[in-house]
Structure formats: C-alpha cells, structure tokens
Image 1 (cartoon, helix red, strand yellow):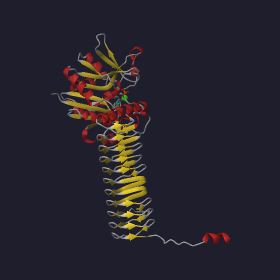
Image 2 (tube, rainbow, N blue to C red):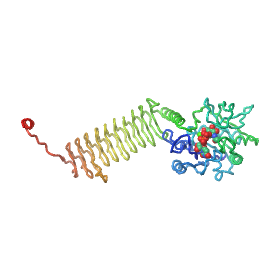
Image 3 (cartoon, rainbow, N blue to C red):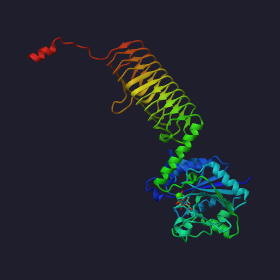
Image 4 (tube, rainbow, N blue to C red):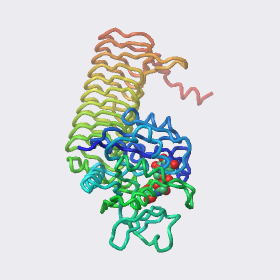
Length: 456
Ligand code: UD1
Ligand code: CA
C-alpha cells in the first residue's frame, strides 16, 4: 500500500467573514470548521497530516493539538504558496497527498476515501474532487477539453463569461502524487487577477507535462460547501445539523422536531431517549437511554444516566444520575454531581454541589458549595449561604436531614444525620444528628392591637 499524507490549508484570515475570529475557527454545530476536517481525516489511514497555519496560528494549534503537524505560512500569498510551506516536512516522500481546505467542514471521510482510491487506481498525478451546482459563483470552474478530460481550473475572478457558465466546480479537495505536487508547485506563478499563487494551477502544469489528471465527481454539492462568509456558515450549520440529528434518529433516539434540536458532533445519546424541541446539547455531553430531555433545555459537557427527565432547564459541566427528575426551570451549574433518584424542581439552582441519592430540592432553592447526603429534603425557599463577600464556604447536610422551608444555612456549617431544621431558621452553628434546631425569633401575638391602633 502507498504511503498517504494530508495537508490542511488553514492559514487565511477569512476577510469575507468580517470577524475577529479566524475563519477556520468559526464553529459549525459547536466545533471549529478545521476540527471537523481533521476529525474526518483522522478516520482514514494517513501517515502524516500537516496543517498550514498563519492567522491565529496559536489558537488553531490549541484546538487541533498533537493529532497533526504544522507548517507556518507567515504571509498568505495563495493556496499554492500555502502547500509549499509543507515542503520541508513532505517533499521527497513517495506516496499520495490529500490536500483539503480548512473551510470545507462537511466533507466526509468516506468521500475522501473514494477520492484517494480512484486516484491511486488511475495512477494519476492529480485527482480533483469536483461537484455540480446551479450557483457556482465564487468557486473555481473545472474546464474540460472536447474529449471530456480535465484541462485546468479557472478561478471565478479570472474566468471568461463562457467559463463562468460551467457548473462543475473545484471543491478545493485534491489528491496528488506527492513528489509531482512539490515539483509542479515550483512552476506556479501569481499572474492572475488576485496576484496569488493558486494551487489549482498545478492541474494545468501537470497536464501540460503530459501527466494523468482525473476528477472524482461527488453527487452531493452540499457536502463540499466552502464557507467564505456567514451566509455559507449558516448553510453549513443547517446541513451538519441534519446529518447529526439523522444519525441519532437511526440509532434509536426520538427527536420530536429535528429542525429545532441542536446537537454537537461529539454528543452521545442512548436508545429510546426523547428530545423535545429547543434542546441544545453541546460539548462532550453523554445521555443514557430512556431519558426525556426538553423542551427548551440546554446542556453542555454533562453526563446523564438512564431514565432521567430534564425539562426546561440549563446544565453545565455536571454529572447527573439515573431516574433523576430536573425542572422545569432549574439551573445546574458547573461541578455538580446529582446522584440517582434525585428531584430538583422549579427555580432551583445547584452549584458545585454533591447531591445525594434520593434527595429533593423541589422549589426555589440555592444549593452552592455543598455536600448533601442521601434522602435529604430541602424545603421550599431554603438556601446555602456560601459567600461572605470574600470567600466561599462549604455546607454539609448529612443523610436524612429535613430542612424546613425558607431556612438559611450559613456556611461553613454541618447539619448532622437525620436532624430537623425548623422552617424559617437561620442556622449559623453546627446541628447535631437527630436534633431539632430552631433558629428564629419566637412569635408574639398582641391581642386586639389593630383596634388600639385605629383608636389612637
Ligand atoms: C478555493 C479555490 C477554488 C475552490 C474553492 C473551494 C484557490 C485559488 N481557489 O477558493 O478553486 O473552488 O477554494 O472552496 O485555491 N489559505 C491559506 N493560505 C493562503 C490562502 C488560503 O492557508 O495563502 C487557506 C484558507 O485559510 C482556506 C483555504 O486555504 O481555508 C481556501 O482559501 P480561500 O481563500 O477560502 O479560497 P477560495 O476563494 O474559497
Ligand atoms: Ca474558501
């Protein structure tokens, strides 16, 4: 088998995005475009991948990490010039090199694989991935001769009226014989409308040298969409969303309204889980089976067990167990662990808390910086007072505690096993296990006081 290499072009600023953020880092379904590209390449057997970086180099590196090598293109003089920067790492190697743009996030590994296979079977020096579209404006056009063989690629801005009518476009993905690629790159000039060194010019150069150049046509233009502006970004988002949602549905997840359900690529969802409209699942969220999520629920980097219901709520960076019932209108903030069979009801906020098995906070509570044991009942309106304006302190509520309504637990404080807190208490000292603690002013009834007032 041949040695295979890949080059990802990701050095451009992306002027047409009109953004502070470098183009290839714009997310599609929550993941930077260039990361989608690298993820797909990573599914193939590629010996070495080189990403060409320039604008936002450090940021791009921090997203892609060690899965790829890097070559710096300090000045962006065009796509051919970009590939040239990989010369030190790749030139002289025998094999096939896949070149792909960092702004084509929808191209699947299956398509890349078919392209590479056709290229190698034809013993071609170059194979272009092409697609057909009724709106080819902006793309390079594939110019074929009378026999139908590819002659060259003409950029939109350089194309004649007649050439602009061509509906077969260059997707910006190619396979090259590695040695022939780096040889041909030396002959690319920048004499064109944009004054750039165009990678597509390599095609005409190889062709003129009598080399075999072929094209692999995909029948799905949407997969090859190049994102140059925010309009295309929204189109990419829409296509990716359909792809992700369909994969979950085929895996046994019910999505009531796929058009209004947003799932990031790395999210995992178990069978027979139902997602209601307005659900947004992002990051590395993992949800078990038989859960009900939504409507209008946002979860990021959370894990959820089985048979859990989360309605109209927000949860971040937390772990939620099985048979849990959350919402409506709850907020689970980072670093919380919600154990099995818990109930978190409406207008309850949990932050950095361990909430034990079978415990309940059903209404209007704030539980932050806390360790809550199992089978605890937090009454309506009760809160942990975790912050003195400078530092945060821990509240410990041991197993089986009953916290009466509207109590304040002023941290640091521990409420021992099985204790009862009378409603309306402000607890500032530890409560021993099994004790009843009442910390509020005694009630005084002044008989007939109202009548006296009126007589004054
Ligand atoms: C390019 C192709 C065009 C094709 C289209 C497909 C050229 C000249 N044109 O056009 O034929 O139809 O892609 O989407 O190649 N980049 C660098 N360094 C540079 C310039 C660009 O790394 O000096 C990177 C960009 O970050 C981007 C990619 O190369 O990820 C493509 O560049 P872009 O300017 O978007 O090219 P297009 O005009 O879309
Ligand atoms: Ca582009």
